[in-house]
Length: 270
Image (cartoon, rainbow, N blue to C red; front, side):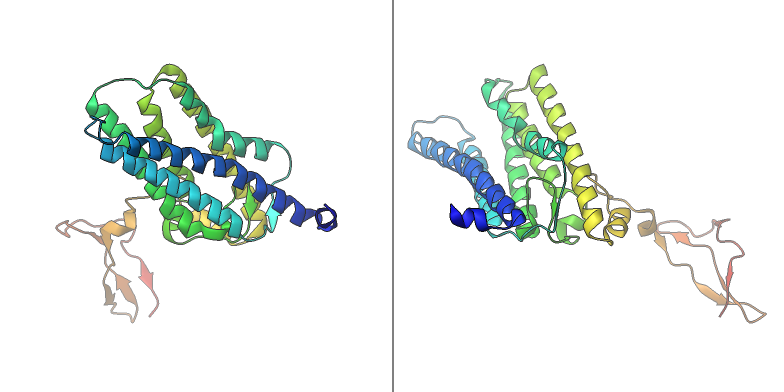
């Protein structure tokens, strides 16, 4: 106790935050492991044809929770933390509100629907494992800044972990679909959006380069098709007066006969 009292305020807060995350997700990991054990114990008498997919989804979920525990234990000390109660409440509700889906009974909408739902859960957890492994020691539940990650999945969207987790959430919701379930998932996503906004506010205050990163990287929807990808560079030709002139850019796959009025007559010094 004396050691705890002698710790600086920031270090004490980080230690308590780690302890809370490890305790909660430790319970999740234990529950997942027990579920997998029950599934294996009844393996021989289980007639469900997609039990292999069920097992794969459960194993992926357990691996994701264990990775959360590891990254929390080894994460860097925060350089800044969101102030006030709202960022913390939004983070907790965005993270744990979907646990309420466990009280809803599964619905039977046919094997194709169930296989689709379990597949989404499996894909969501696998993608979440990849993103969290890339984020590594910068992970946190509440909005904090540690190290700015802009490569890998974070070069596709600014919040890939939230997107991948939501894929798994949609799969879980499909298993017990109802108007109340849809409402819970919608409210949970609203809190996740607030969580993103709070996180970006902290990152902007800590990293001056974040604005440039945000300008070139979408928030949650990947920019699959960029206009510049479908144009080839315009050739440069010599002008009689000693200047160089660019011909209009040609779209890939076009005949090259069309002229672009935006580029027509544009000159650049040699």
